[in-house]
Length: 460
Picture 1: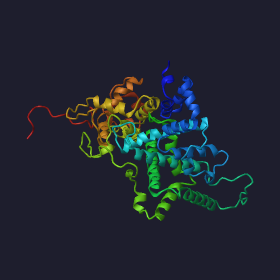
Picture 2: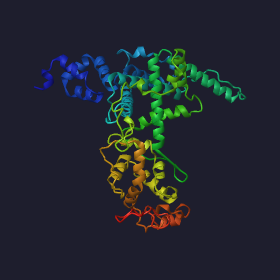
Picture 3: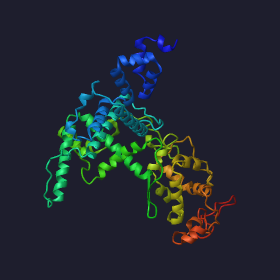
Picture 4: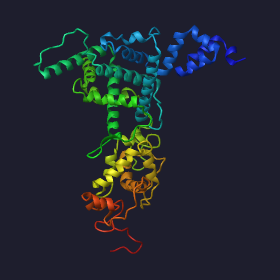
């Protein structure tokens, strides 16, 4: 006799409403007749319970986003989208495609919540440790922001039905048209957000600021721009899917679009000002809108003892350094004139491009910590937590050593050392010299570093 045959009906029901996703639910009802029968008795309740398990706390907001995706091709106007209250119960009809889309959306939200939690709640945890109320705030605000972005992307406030008249005036002033469109967006978002409570409008603004921060992070971590190579992706954030990156880039798009600009946030701020919220609160970012208190807020750097809290980097979050100190800034920390050697720069940039899947900042940092740069007094621990300034100092001390060790493994031929090493000026303007000799070395002529003092008597 199988276990399911001896389980009571209500126990099976409790099991089904607690499964984590729809793949598990499908497997359960396919493999057991008893589970299948219980599901057939309560399909709507079980389906919506599993959907809540998948999505999390912000289920009404997630449903509303999915509904807009469903209706958008035929009618992207947000005025025809039901309010959030309509998505509180189980009357909303689910399709398989909608379920799949909501699972994909929930995964993106979960990954972004993990990042937010690691940045502002607990840097030592790679998965979210937000309290239930904090998680609700984050998810609810993110789904609402995402919906606003999709409305903007679909031109929902400019959409016209077939047969609506367009202006035939070819001489219509372009500036006036842009102004008209921006007013439509602003008024539309004011109407769309007017019923959102004050605290929850502030949460949307915080999510907007977070995505803007991630946009800046991506611009540093993902792209290198040089005159000869152009813009290329360097090191993708390992946890984030392409869709997740697209959501973060949405923040960039909202800033960058020639029309619309920051309409949604401007509308939210106008509503908040009308509710007597001080301007200082609207213009200064505060993560406390979502996170009540951070763990380790008073923690200090293992090297300089500066109090940096969750800005410190260590074993769980070292990959974040890629979006704070980009490849060109790392190169600028080379000693001497190395950062002005175009031949060397092309080599190292090409290396990062070709090895972007396997070379990350944590690998580089921990390898440099193992290196001996001749300074016995400087010790770096892989178990330590360091501020950005100290990590830059590590790159200043040992990034050249790391690249000199790594370059031959990448197929570069062995070169004789240039007498003038990293202080050589010729390498900056004579490519054949830069190509012929190795400059990743200490100068032995010219402006060579002063030799260390020996054990003999000191001059008086």
